Image (cartoon, rainbow, N blue to C red; front, side, top):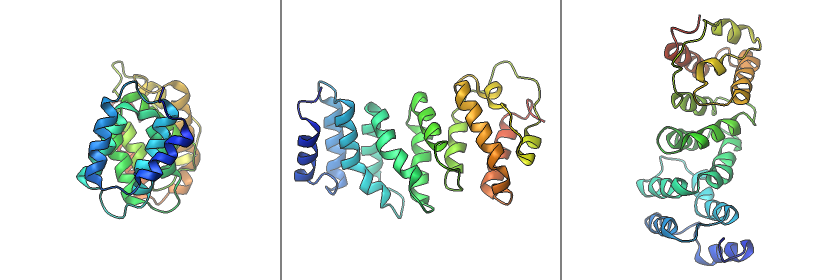
Amino acid sequence: PCPLCCPQLEGLCSFLQLSTCPEQLLVCFCGWLLALTPDLSYASAAILAEQLFLKRVLSLTQPPSRHLIAALTLFCSKYSQPFCRVLVAPVLREPGEGAEQTKLVCELVEEYLEPDYVRLVLSQVLEVPLSEKLLPVVLAVLGRQVRPLCPPAPYRLQQCWSEGQQSSLLPALLQEVLPPELFDLLVLTLCRQAPAFATSLSYAKLVTAVLTMYQGHVS
């Protein structure tokens, strides 16, 4: 465990002004964290994730710098769970469009997070009301899934989404990766909220992507 208790660590972060330090130094600091032994406790890693990144990410109005991306990827390579809980969850819950924040989460899902934490991101998405901002994140998660080796019988996915019916389609489609309860929750969410996205281009893109990816398995 980390030798510092949480209040001491928070005080140290504040004293060092880690939330506002130059991003070049942030990369060096995160590199040092990776080499630190013993590993940080979950609580300590969560505090550091919040102090190092939360304010920076929530305030993004343009694409993050290469230094910030480097620091983020270094940190989440070792402390993905506290990273997702403390940083990704607030980004998903933040009101407003949050275009740069959404793009960043999508990039992390597509390029850097391990499968367990991709599933964690999806579960976090499904804990909040689905919105236009979150649709690209769901699409990014789907892009990480493994195509089933044995195709299931055709499903009427278009009918389900157009009529808002409840169904469990994705367990058969994505059973290589996502657990059944997450399949069911995702499909239920998409079906229930389909009427709200009747004119949404992003929702249409998500449906099209699923139908294209599994064109031999859905009807």
